[in-house]
Image (cartoon, rainbow, N blue to C red):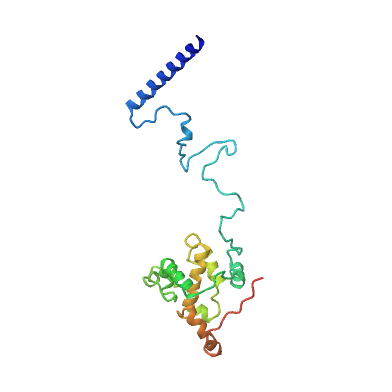
Length: 223
């Protein structure tokens, strides 16, 4: 008797549940019906700039600042300060990690023509379209002049790209460290008159014997 009683009770429960689910589906054909723990299927999407309170972060925004001293994954820290001393030290010790080839210089040319050519010019002589239009207060110094004076170093250009100089603002957000070195490779090509690295390597022995050859910078070895 008890078995029949429980069986009837179970069947009645199933019938009620089926009626309930079918009624939900009939009202809205797209409805999944009554879900158990719906958050497990469709987690709520919080607003990226909303305020979320928790025991660990009682009063902070979701887009919090990183921990002090942390470095983004894959990022190369630049150890030199934004002043003349830092510029001088970078010129002496901050060296390119790239083995410069014609293809590296071509990558730098692509970036140069999108970030630098408007002021520094297609030849690197400071005669860019923005300067020639008269909307720039003063022309940037020519890379060719810096090269001939022995002052065009990769570390110096990297320092200027990172921090900016005079009326030029920082381009650290436009160019990551890898891209900066690629631009620098092309800037060095412009400084020596536009010769690709493959041609310059062949010309160097003759240039060293020439009285009119550009003065090459003497830089200290990186410690």
